Image (cartoon, rainbow, N blue to C red; front, side, top):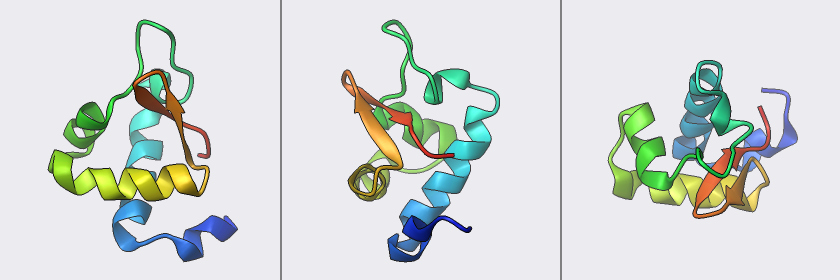
Length: 80
């Protein structure tokens, strides 16, 4: 990936970023959430087929680097 944030991310966060970009192609609310529909951490884990506890750390890294953005009590994909 050409994004400079790619180099500082751990492997789990890189994998989650790639998976979320793929999933967001079919679920546009990951990129543009509404009040009624947005992605919570447990849904993100379900969408990528991962354990919810294991995804929390990757989500934290993605939020810290500005790839994911908190939205209500969930997240939106800010960089894709």
